[in-house]
Structure formats: structure tokens, C-alpha cells
Image (tube, rainbow, N blue to C red; front, side, top):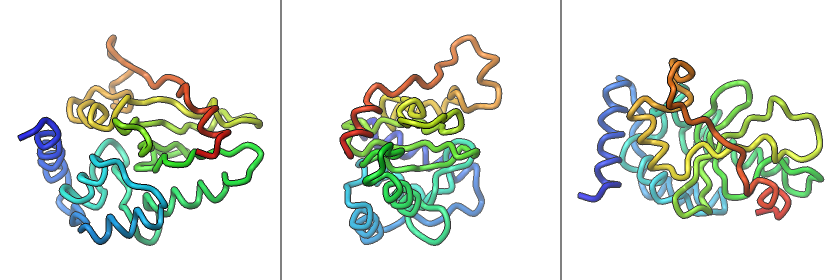
Length: 185
């Protein structure tokens, strides 16, 4: 068993332990449909989570969004945000970053599907004052696997008692934000 196999198994165990009505996982056809509509390939670990754990409904705080469907979903949120960004003087959402969960107050966690490790980003638009959106993007974790490990360990900045700990690691500004927003990629 690889480390990623073990991680997916531990995520599935916790997801089932925390929810009595966890959605069924999606099949390969749903993954393919999502990727077709997104116009990008999902990060492999993200695809495994939807294929092997559940169609959202697990994870930190507000839980992962469903992949497809009516209402808020990964595909629906991505397409809405990208549509508003394409051709805009100040695009807000970069290509390839799929929103996976909402933190509330218009904040999102997103996975950069163009990043080898699947960087997890925080979009925090509330202090936006006009102009570029780059100051609203933060690197939450260098990779999706590390982000999931943080959730499993209960050590993320999003945990209720996080600010009481001395070892808290807060999201830092995403250094690629300006380039990714201005390039359309």
C-alpha cells in the first residue's frame, strides 16, 4: 500500500465516522463528465477522493462540495467564477483552481489542478478594495495530501482552537497569484 492509498483509506474511515448520510462515491463516467465541463483534468488525488470516498460531504468544517449537480458544486462554482474572470480587467479566479469547499463569507478552499502536488489555496475576498484580486489568494498547503493530513490531525488553521496553539501555521500570500490571474491561466 502506498502512502496515498493509506491516506485515502484514513480519509474514508474518518468521513464515514463523521457522517451517517455520506453521499456515494462517483464513478469514472462522472469524473470524465466533470473534467469535460471544467475543461481541465482534476488533480489525481482529488479525483480519487471523489471516486473512492464520497461525492463531497466530508472534510474540514463545511465539507467538500459535490463534484456535479444542482446547487453549489465543484464544477458549478468553478464555471461561475471563471466566466466572471475571462476577459475581465481584473480577473478574480485563475484557470485550473477548482473550489472544493466554502468556508462561508465568500471564502473558498481550492485545489490547483495545474500544480503537481495539488496546492490547496484559500480565496479570501472580504478585504478586496478594488484593482487586482491577487491579495485575496493565499497558499493554505503545498499539496492536497498535506492539507488532508492537517485535517486528519486536527491541526489546521480552520480548527476551532487553532489560535490557542503556539504551532499554528496560517495561510501565506500565494506568490503565483499575480501571474496566474494576469495570464488567464
